[in-house]
Structures are given as C-alpha cells and as structure tokens.
Image 1 (cartoon, helix red, strand yellow):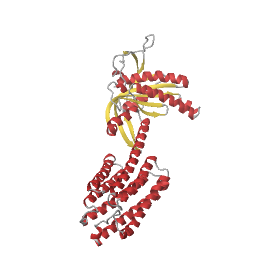
Image 2 (cartoon, helix red, strand yellow):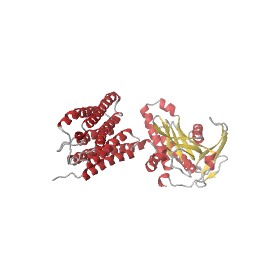
Image 3 (tube, one colour):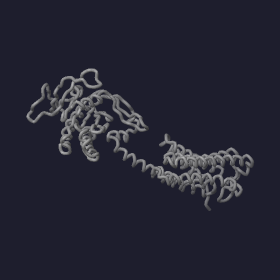
Image 4 (cartoon, one colour):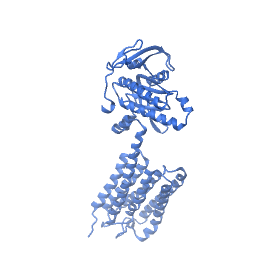
Length: 457
C-alpha cells in the first residue's frame, strides 16, 4: 500500500521553499526574482502545514491553520502571476499594455478567490477545515464555487503569457515564460489533488521550472561572455575575479596615460567611402590593442581616429611610466608601419603624461562607464594634439619616473602654453637611440629594463 508519510511533504516543501530562497539570495535586486521567490516559499510553507494536518488526519485542521493555508495558496498563485507580469515588463511596447492588463485582471480574480475562501471558512468552519477523502481534496460544491474563479484567473494569465511569447520577447525571458507555462499546471494541481499525488505533481513542476531556470542562466552567462568584448580585458578580468564592487570603486592613484591620434584623418575620411574608413580604423585599433596588451595598458576610449590608453588602471602597475614609454615607442613603430602599407598619406602622433587620476565606474544613461579623470588625461590629449607625425611628446614627470635600463633619447623642448593649463608645460620628445648613436639637443640617455607584461604578472 502506497503511504504518504508527512516526511514526503516536508522534503518537497523544503526543496520548493529552499529554491525560492536561493533565487532571492542570488538575485534579490530583481523584482521578478523576488516575486518568484515569494511564490516558491509560499508553496513550501503550505506543504509544511499539509504535513501536519494532511487529509488522513483524524482531527480537522484548526481555523487559524486553515486560514493560513488559504492565504499561502492565494499568495503562491498571485506571486506566480506577478512573476510573469514582471517578465512582461521587458516585452515589446505594443503588447506590453495588453499583457499587463491581463495579468492584473488575473491577480484580481486570485484576490476574489482568497476572499471567498475566507468567507467559506467563516460560514462553515468545520466543513472548510476538513479535506475530502480520496484523490481530490475538494468536494463537488466547493469545486463548483471556486473552480470557475481560479480557472478564469489562470486562463487570463495564460493568454498574457502566450501573447508575450508570440511578440518576440527577449529569448532569455521567453525561456522563463515557457518554464512557467509548463510547470504552472503541475504546481497548481496540488490545490486540487490530495494524497500521494501532491509530492509527485509538485516535484514534476519543480523540475520543469528548474530546467527552464538553468537554461535562462546559461543564456545570461553566454551574454556576459559576449559583453566582455565591449570592455577591456583588464576590466573584464577584474569583474570576473573580484566582482563588480572592486570595479565600481572609485579611487585616486598615480598612473600614466598614452593618447594617440592619426594625422590627416579628417581629409582622408571625407574623400573615401565610409566602409573603407571603417576598415582602416579596424586595422589601426587592432595594432593599438595588441601593443597596449603587450605592455599592460588598458584602452579606455576609441574616439574616431584617437585612442586613449591607461597604464596603471584598473590594474595598478608600479612601473607604469616605464610601460607607458615602451608602449608609445612600439606603438609608433607598429602604427607607422601599418599606415605606410594602408594609407601613406596619414601620420601618427602620440602624447604621454603621468599624474594623479581618479579612476572607477560612474552610472550614466542607465549604464556603467569606466572613467579616468585628471590632469594627466587632459595633458596627454594636449600633447598628442601638439605632436607632429612620427613624434612622441611627454611631460617631464613621466621622464623623471623612468628607470635606468634601455637606451632612450629625451629631447627637452621649450615650455609650451597648452589649452586648459594656466602655466607653460615643460615638454620632452622621446625616441630611441639612432643606429649611428646620434642624440638630440639637450638629450640624455635613459635605460628601460624589459619588464613582464600584465598578463604574466
């Protein structure tokens, strides 16, 4: 003989409520996940109570316990519909208004169902607090009164879900809606059936729901991997290893900034097809990206034909000045070689600066943006503007921070008045020692010891 020990209801209830709490714990800021958690927790608590006053109990459940049971049942249904409604918020504008009204009407009927059950409990408490024997938990007249209301509520919610699925909703949300539409009938069956059927139907419904949830998380994970292509590898690694808290934190640190810009690009772009211009930019960006990665630099911005590179953020680098100079020298060499092959009429200028800079993420236009704000960023941009094609201009702070290793020529220039800076700025032109060993006027030899890149540290 198949027995229904209270342990079975307890275990299924524990799984259901635990699943809801897990969703709440991991995604508490999401309104849809909170609604889903409330639905599952309410079902789990209802099963705990069923284990203590099941249909085979000799004494009917108390009035207070039954009222709690009814409230949990209604809360579970209402929250499940609310979950679908929250998902519907991400649907297309043309179908959103209609589906939201359907979901709201469905929830109103759930409230009516709850009120009628409470009225039944007040009018005939003994009858209302006892379950019918057999497979079905409800009697014929109870079914005739409550089934139409609950069925109408479910039908309205089902129409809303079908409308959303037919309106090309986001694929990840479509997976959750599909899981809800399949698991919902099994979860609701526990309101009608009794005996050994309850844990079976709930377990089947929970499995369908978990399958949809796992698929949803896989889709979102794949999207997260794809989004890494839109941020620098260093920021993506920081998010993966330390989480968003570390990446979001704003701090002020000393770092070096490299700014490069194509010369003659405006005329070049005006005289050519946009596809040809984009192809050139792709090649240029590829060269800049590879050189930056070789020296631990992080590309902050692509602005047309200009690229801003941070050396020392978001990953701190104690030898940021050395890396920035090596980066600029290699970038000039590789960039000019690419330009000579693809567009000889263009040129390349580079500016470097070192200083205290505030780095971190700010929220703007409903998205996060990693920013770098400080005089070093502005100065690097101004020096880049002043640099002739093939020229690397640096501030003296970068030069003073260099270590003595590889040979380098620094040619001092007359202090220049730059836009946005009240005092003239001392400027140096950087280049490697010529093959014949010649040096520029007022130059000095520097040595830059080869260092490991950020990837190998």
